[in-house]
Amino acid sequence: MKLLFATHNKHKLEEAREILGKLDIEIEHFEIEYDEPRGEDTSEIAEKSARDLFSRIKKPLFLDDSGIFVNALNGFPGPYSAWVFRKMGYQGILKLLDGNENRKAYFKSSIAYASEKGTFVFDGIMKGSIPKEARGDNGFGYDPIVVPEGMDRTFAEMSDEEKNSISHRKIALHKFADFLSS
Amino acid sequence: MKLLFATHNKHKLEEAREILGKLDIEIEHFEIEYDEPRGEDTSEIAEKSARDLFSRIKKPLFLDDSGIFVNALNGFPGPYSAWVFRKMGYQGILKLLDGNENRKAYFKSSIAYASEKGTFVFDGIMKGSIPKEARGDNGFGYDPIVVPEGMDRTFAEMSDEEKNSISHRKIALHKFADFLSS
Image (cartoon, rainbow over all chains, first blue to last red; front, top):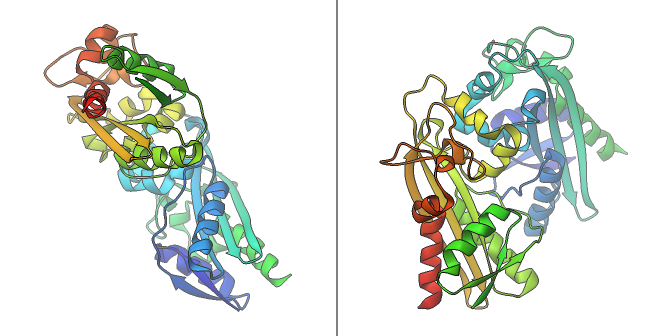
């Protein structure tokens, strides 16, 4: 089975290939510009984006919208995580949390798949926390400040394999794979 | 002359009435939900929003998208100023700038007017800076941390009249009024 993945992010592409490849799904990279709608949640944004894109290109495709939702910041940066990262990196999040003992956060990935049958969204949520300092140099984006619940290492301190066995994106991709194979 | 102003913000409504009222333009408040598109700039967001809204309601209308663009934060919070304010207030901006001597910022208001003749955007920009501490209790939103260039008081330390004689929104509204009367 072959699927188009609309993304500009090569790391996401690799993650999807690693996870879906095991399920015999071949990912074709698809670079296209699209306007992301605003929304309070990644699932809403992914769903609208995939539907709009499908109506333009008329080929089955999927895409991902991910976010990091920090409790003490009322869910900031949430659906604007990528944009906020471009403005201030993960350092901005650490600065905003400086002196705050509540480090809880959750990490969410929403995969939306659009085809002639409709648009379907698969959410993966991972609970965790934000450390007081960034650690590790593997991965991308916010990985150096993402600590999964029950662990003490950040995503950036793990191998790709370990990260991809527990991540929010893995959860979403597996739900998507189950849907495809059913 | 009568015009629909699509806004949920009563302060913006009052400002517009005060400024356009002097020019014999009557503002009718128009409460409606609309999806704001994403964009890197307030003019782009205002323009798309007004055009979409006009295509739905088929009545001439205008709306405003405003932002505060902080130099040391690469323009953050910019087009997401209202959303960021709901998440962390102006305190978040002060925290992000803590220890930073570069306090420069600019404040931008984009008014978009849509009618059967097309969509027109009027930008008002005011240069200024962010103080080290919030001051004053007049106004709304980021006003306690907005210091216009060449002044030392914040918008929140000024009377409505003084603020409305220099603000970025006043500049945009006057351009709009000039357009309407020509």
